[in-house]
Length: 103
Image 1 (cartoon, rainbow, N blue to C red):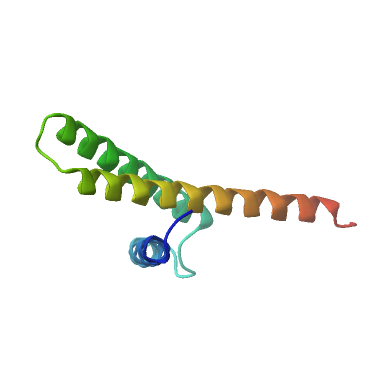
Image 2 (image 1 turned 90 degrees about the horizontal axis):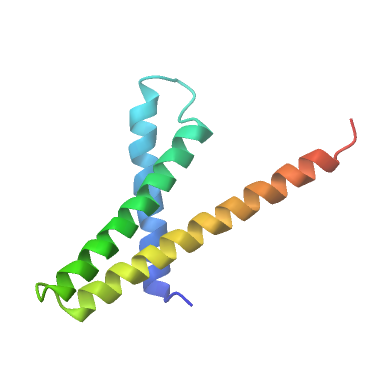
């Protein structure tokens, strides 16, 4: 289970990512970022967290990093993946609800 601090960091990272994405997409669209752009940024963020945790693990194996950095990187990756899975589940549930609506 994620700690409250890790969850707060995950929400802060998501807010920063959405602000960054909104800034990039505003020049292209006046209505704000598209869902596809937000999804692409979220997946990219999770992939970056995974790469960071892998790099920290390799650095520790080479004796260049300490255990606390590795644990922190792995925990951040866990929170990012958990958040992404929760969003995916909610999108699927919403799609199923829409498909159940009468025409």
